[in-house]
Image (cartoon, rainbow, N blue to C red):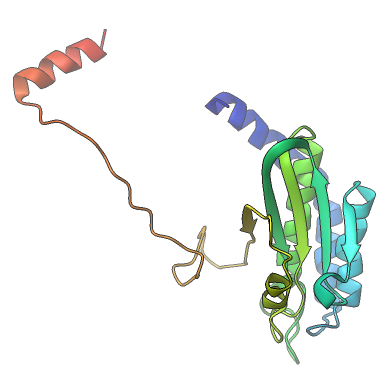
Length: 200
C-alpha cells in the first residue's frame, strides 16, 4: 500500500469514527455515570457489546470464567493478522472512573466499529476483548492464563493521558528500537558528483 492509499484509508477511518461520535460519547458517559467495581461491570459489559452485536460482530459473554468479560470478533478477508483491542471498564471504589476506563472501553469498541465500517475487506481479524477487573483482580492475567490471547498477533489499548504519548516507558510490552544504518564515507568531490546525479 503506497502512502496515498494509506492516507485515504486513514481518512475513511476518521470519517467512520466521526459518524459514530454521538453513539460513542453516549456509551462513555453512561459508563462514567454508573461506575461498577471489579467483577461487577454488568451494565458496562452490555453497553459496550450492544453496538458490536448490531454491527455484526460475533460476541461471546463471560469468557475465561469471568462473568463480565466478553470477546467480540469480526473477520474481514482471511489471511491477515489477528489484532485484539482491549477494553477496560471497571471503576475505583469510592471515586468512580478516575482512571478513565469508561474512555478505554469506548475507544476499543469505537476503533473496531470504525475499522469494520471503513475497511470491510480488511485482511485479518479484529477482536475486542472486554477485560474486567483491571483495578482489583487482574482480569487480563486470568484471561491470559485461560488462553484467551492464544493466536493473537498483536494486542492494543489506549489509556487517557494529559500528554500525547503513544507508549509509556514503564510498560512491560514496550521496546526501545535499535535502528541500524549502512553507509559509506564520501569525500567532497564525490558528494558533489552524487548531488548532481540526484538533482537530474
